Image (cartoon, rainbow, N blue to C red; front, side, top):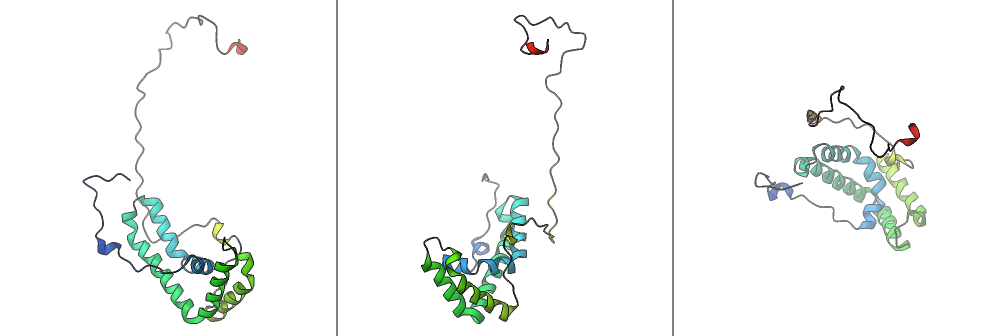
Amino acid sequence: MVITNNTTLPEESELNVQELNLSSAALRAGSFHLGKQCEQANNEFMLCRQELDDPRACLAEGRAVTSCALDFFRKVKKSCHEEFTQYATCLDKSSGTMAFSHCRKTQGVFDKCIKDNFDWDRPSYGYFSRAKIVKSAREAPKKEEKVSYPDATPGLPEDYPKPPAKYGSRFHWLE
């Protein structure tokens, strides 16, 4: 995106939002349930970014994603804090890559707590990679009409003489 003198930037007050103050392990521990619970807000934001190709136009959608994530982690902290902390600590300490495979027991305990308190199921394997059609309340942006230009170099007239090639044809196998 090129910035010119005509570009208007948002005010600082529009850009200030409360941030998620969580570690990578905590975000990874809650990622599957967070992705499922905030799916609509995430889809709206990504659709806006793809369609409008201007991050300034999607500030409201970005705030909605952050708000959804904050609400999710507040609910988890209120009801499943101990289980969540154990799972996040296991992810953080068990391997250098925070692999899920080392923490299946604590994951099961956390998933059970989420199921018992919120009746949320962990998304099935491959859920986030499936193709989905997103229904949005926003209007689709108007598409620009493609400009067609006339051919700048008109061809030779049909009766123009076409002598044989001086040094032979490059399509010699067709002759």
